[in-house]
Structures are given as structure tokens and as C-alpha cells.
Image 1 (tube, rainbow, N blue to C red):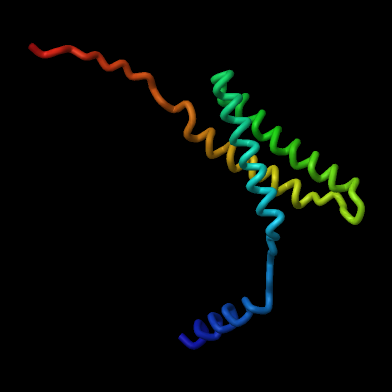
Image 2: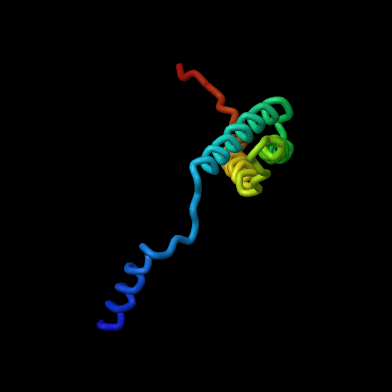
Length: 119
């Protein structure tokens, strides 16, 4: 019991000292923008083509392209640079939205229900 208590003390005591990752508010905005762009593209592509694979890849590509274009533009601005972390955040937002929508779209089976009136 004593070694377990020492281990827990070290574990919880060390959490204030160490920070493994930091996600900025700007990265969260990039993730949300990527998800919004991807969801919109998926909905439009699927409504036109009724093809889940094409809608998935178009939506993922669009969000990745939007992230790259935004960071390429930021790289040309004064006192700014191309940030790959923000581009990845945008792409991950797009991937999250595309996978989520892909799971739930087009799974309906057309069941024909016949109505027979009872007299």
C-alpha cells in the first residue's frame, strides 16, 4: 500500500510541473473552420453525386486546400510565417467532419411498406 501511495503522490505532484501539449485558441478556430468547410463540401457533393467516396475525398481535399491556402497567405504577410500546425489543425477538422458524416449518410435501406386497407 505504501509504494502505491508514493507512486500516486509522484504522479499527481508532477502534473503541475510538466505540460505535454498546448493547443492554442487559433488552432481550435482552424479545426472548426476545417470541419465547417468539410461538412459543407460533403453535403453539396453528396447531394449532387450520391457517391459517398467522392464526397469524402472532395470534402477532405477542400479543407486541406483551404488550410494550405490560408497558411500560404499568412506566409506572405509581414511578421508572420507559414504555420504547419495550423494547417494540420484545419485538415484534422476536415477529416473529423468527413468521417463523422460518412458514417451516418446513405445508410437508409429503401423499405417498401405496402398499405393494405382492412375492410
